[in-house]
Image (spheres, rainbow, N blue to C red):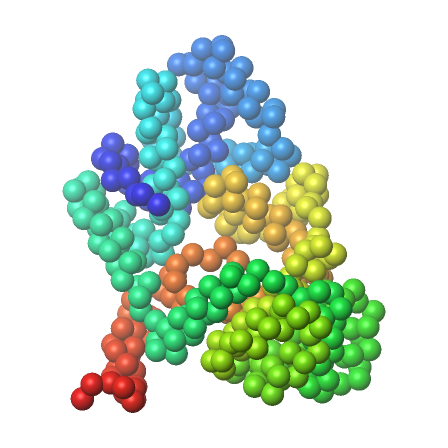
Length: 380
């Protein structure tokens, strides 16, 4: 995303969490809720129609933002009004100032608190631009700071994904059932677990089998090798689809074959889960009631995001609380990749800690690279 640098005319509090909680929603409601005298009746009617067209959840969010606005000092409230009028005047003349503010606000959301504080404490616009440029440059560097194991795995998965895309094949329902039966027998689960899974739909049963298997593997590195060479051979034998079987057998590299079979099974399970189990979207009324049931701290945390993201996150949290199938698929995702939904930034990075509070740093990674054994074909 392109980060705008022309922030000279905005006060320093635009880099704080206040902007994310309050500014965007309150700007829409300012003319209507505050009765500002600089707006014509058509403008007020237009804003009133926008608010009336909102869903119950969006109106509840706007109400909370307005309460936050009322708690601000009078000077800050007036400063917000002036900013809103300036943005509206620019918009009517064909300017892009509103988009610049939105892009800048979204980019700030990708930064950690201490990085936002670093920008906020510089009052000089030139100094701010320099800090922003440095942060963007450092972010690009961080994308390349992987440990050797993670880098090799990333490279392997990239190659496997390319082959998987060229295959564009999935297991049929019968082949997937046969494959999961082999996995279940090899894992030797307890009879109580097997009996509990029998009552579930096939897709949910498959997800629970993989969750139990990965939890037995323990460490993250072992979870990436959950399929052994013999298991891959046994799985391939029970697949009846000749096209799929031939695609697997023509791959000679063991690691690539393991990754391909891994992705093939997961892709097939996910497709069946989406067709038969995927939870329906909650209604606006359900989201509004769920939003009211959240704690004040959680509501304030949600307000840090744009209205579109708020609704998406709220819908996700609603389904996570009310649907066990959703919790199962997200647990499987976490076990397979270690990732959380809506997370930004490269894997393994801790965005909410200062650099001196992090664990393994660049120096440790370089030392690990230095200690890595050279390859056989490496030059002396």
